[in-house]
Length: 450
Image (cartoon, rainbow, N blue to C red; front, side, top):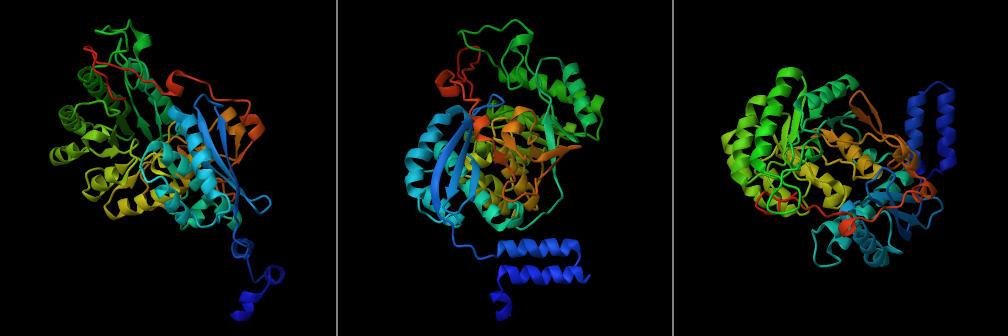
């Protein structure tokens, strides 16, 4: 055993090659042994040499990616730090506050680095620090995978499944018939899970709708939203979808935290008959305690969590089995390091994962979602991740989508390389309040929490 451990790389490769030539080892076994050899080649611990931020918006969303370069030639990694509504603040958090702490630190002590940075500002569990921390964390996982010559999911324990089942959103507009037609097209593409949304004529809503009718005017000049109207429209949509699309398709629906607690309880009871795959964000995070009331009164599957920042938010919902799917935004929670622990905790309590994957997640972030999907036994469903157009030109090597499933790139790390020169041709655009200024009000002028 001692002699084997002391063999150098060349000796091992000669031995394996000789065995292959003699017919004693299959090509698959040879590849596996070579991968193990690369992972145990005894490279010295890499040190962090530089930390930078890539800002780009190839598809409109303001994407923030952290790049960490080590002192070993060609060894670097990327991580998603996208907080699209406050992108520049995250850049400052990375460059002014985290970078000075990181230079010279070992790149291979990921959990230790995460804990250090998490506590570094004393105040914690906020979206700015969490997203900045996520960018660093994911970049270190990418480096670890590149160093080992393995995809990140291998470092997390290997595959529990071949690919991740995904869903698509067919919301928008105010005509139920149009939503159903879009759902049929998605089914023809191979989707087995579809989130259906409907707008409100003349009102703003999560699914849009104002452009389809003259705007409803309230006691103010901002867009109007009334939750009771949305409830009635959503119930009509779900009834029509179940009748016309059949029982085989899995339907999802999102209320986007816009209902009063008692409205949410009643709505969850009313949709029980439609057998949803899950009802998403029926409550705002401030009203989490009402999940107990919902759970006591109906069996509608529930998902929650895209706005969560703190363990104080998700721990009670998981440990008390008040939700069925934990829907955390991975960069919002601080990256892969905390989310693999959240997934492990959720598995114990019978809660499945459904990581948030909208358009304002970079392809690096979508890859991180997917690698967690593949490695975690309690995977439920994945939103998004289907990268097309110029976004796939800037981020090369993205996961592939086929017949509703998302497949990982088998290259080391996340398997993605960024064309930084091309990324620079798509600078982020300035907007109101730096890109995040949602003003929606009820008829009387009360602000609606988006």
